[in-house]
Image (cartoon, rainbow over all chains, first blue to last red; front, side, top):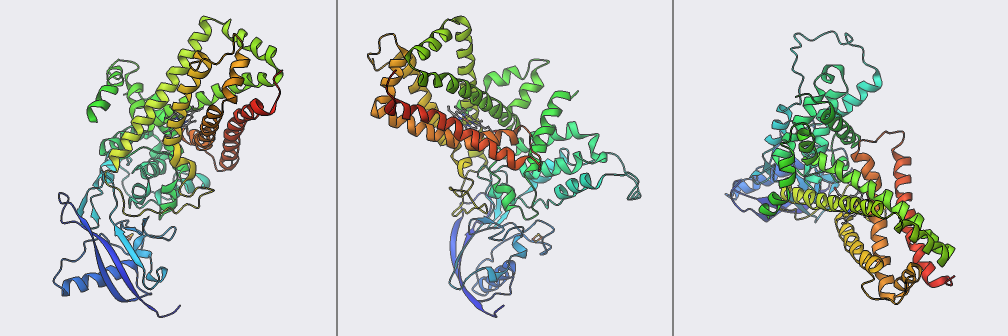
Length: 254
Length: 243
Ligand code: HEM
Ligand code: FES
């Protein structure tokens, strides 16, 4: 690994608030270390902007280690940038070349309104979870891990679905701004385990209803979401969501 | 535009209030439900195409065989009329759902990106390939079906084929303009189905790591077998003697 530095042009979306129009603005940034993460590079840009008396670019982030799902940037037309299975905070500047222009946009979806610059409001996801992404029994203290025996294969399916960090890259990358991958992961992680099994009928009906209510699009089975997902959630969860939905529609008693 | 959707959605809105079937109608109107209907209607149309193609292969057997087959079909009388009405209804539903889901998604992403790039390595066509051409290929098919009915059922161009359906088909297909339009439509059909059939399985929840690859392969193969089957009739019109 070389200790190169990069001179970059950043084409960044600037928008004062959710009501204002917004526009791209170009910034030159020089001497960017290839060891920096993408977010550190933005920190450097903001230092430069503050010194020049400009408003720094607002962007979301929290853990900076790929687990919270806060960092949400469309980088050169790809959710979380060019790497597979990587969040923006895990992306490094060595992925870019000296002289590059990097286009940085917020997630674009009617259900994710831009709050400021690159920050979008993803509370639509929270409302979908609130509509059914839980188990309503009081579990008390943490039970013994093996109190309910669950076959390893089933556990794997649930754990793979539970890897979803709710970042919204699936919505961002989908040409229909569909939240199907997110919802399917949240439905699946509970539906396949005994604890979540009992409430699976109402859960899937309510979560799909809330998803539509929030104004997400439909699924074209293009699998762009799966490719963009930093947690590598599989579209097989969407097939399970569809199965659950048909079943629930037929057997629902409410 | 919203008023158009509201009006079009009125029948579904009213039906969803009927006790008993109400919840099912409601489910059919959601994003998931609409796609499931789309898959069922699409696969039904595929079923029709397979039967239709099977009938058309009688062309290879000659004038007597084909006209005999056509007569047998028409002797069904009201049964044929019912089947045709059903087919039309399925087609109309499929088209209506295409417009409705498209409208849903257009509303879901009001402003687009400055730049988009795919993380999928596309086969032939990058960025999901056929999946991104469903609407345009579907519209071509819709236009084609109208033309096709005008050609073969109504003989709107007044081809001088007498009573012989065999002669009519041959004349239509030997007309260079028709030949070209039919070829374009059949390519569109192959593309539409090469995503459509495997997508319908996923939409209907038929997915398993053990079977997905083979299912995908068989779906795409069936798509191009159907499209190729019809294309063989285009070859037939020029390369085979009438018999
Ligand atoms: C009026 C003409 C047509 C239009 C406008 C149309 C439009 C569409 C669209 C937009 C989709 C994809 C929906 C999506 O991406 O979510 C689709 C799916 C499909 N279409 Fe068509 N189509 C037409 C005719 C046909 C015909 C003639 C057939 C079969 C012979 C067919 C078979 C299918 C199948 C199997 C699907 C898959 C459903 C799924 O994705 O689950 N379509 N159609
Ligand atoms: S900041 Fe937490 S995942 Fe990127």
